[in-house]
Image 1 (cartoon, helix red, strand yellow):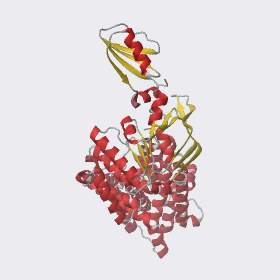
Image 2 (tube, rainbow over the protein chains, first blue to last red):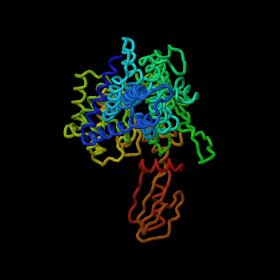
Image 3 (cartoon, rainbow over the protein chains, first blue to last red):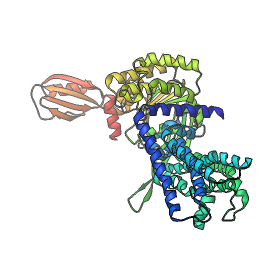
Length: 267
Length: 310
């Protein structure tokens, strides 16, 4: 269990050393990424400049949701965002190389890149979180703190699972990157707002099919001590870790199934 | 070492822009062969004949559609990880090394990927460094290596974990004469000295003639030859050519048992079968001959004939 992680760290280390060969490009990426995410949060403020509340949610509560989703998403993006380029690996047949090595292909794909620049987005998310926590008058309990801290890794696992399943599409289509983006980048965007503002079918889709509502909506209800505007069962607020575990398992199985349908490329 | 029995691979291909029709393409059709430990085997065939597809099924990259494969006693697609520890693979057109890092860093990473103990790694690397002459560019980032240097690096990378069996897909493609020779010397060395079984696909007939004792030829998915090179020459190269230099240019000679293939001034090329003595006597009797020469078909010519279905 530990050994694959050590290998992953080594592979990532190699990627970071590679990126350091292009120092200027890396710095510019980092700054650019930070600026974009700043503008991103402005969009939330613009909405609340025009309306006082979204359903029962005020600006501080939405900022809290936004921050939780952004941090989880940015960290996931940093770790495995290069899955966006996975269709290329399939199309060119370079996935062959991973298959002749005695390691899990998923581990090797995870270890094939590491986007330091995306840390900028997580930093911005953390800043928004600090603002939200200081502006909200929260009643802290141990369990609320635990749920808050756990929600970042749990969110990463959920986002990551969606990403992996999305990447699997490439085994059949040898493309399909944009379709996957709708669920990853699009999913992050949707998770930043309370799901009760969406129509019923979209809400169910987010809660039960692509379980992004568990990234921050349900944990946020618990931490904020807010009654669910939808009146859903209370246990959902604490079920994110279980949902993440199921999502990861499903993603792993889908990946295994998909690899057996790999067709390689001529040459 | 390798047992292949009625192995097939079918692909579904969709054609047409709007009304997409599904077509079944049989890339490999029920081929069977065995390879013993220590063999150095050439695998030949025109583009699209099914060479790479076969190699990919042997290495566990592709799942066969039918038939049985065993490599080192394992079923490749089901026991991929176990098999990967025991085989090496190098694809001339794919990069397995880390592009932006010094060559030696790739070797170190692969050591961890294959879980090779440090002392054994050091030993093997020392040997590969001298055989492949890597020392001058060991610290150079892979992206700055020449093709010849990179291929040597790739070969070292595929041998570092001490595989019993090495698959090479076009290892000498794009290399100059000197670099090709180096690769061939290396393959002979690991085959003879270390007893590594080698299976290589190539378009380079020089590779085949200098390296392989046995040849498999695949065409349109079917195995059309499995045997030695001399037997191949005999089977497909039964016809020889008599080159006749006449005193003066003449119309194509008409000699029983031979066909004039080409005329160039006073020189004519006659294709024939069987013993040369009778034919030579007939030629000398029918025209004034300055010189005679018999050409054996070379492997290039034979392969051309096989591919052209002559």
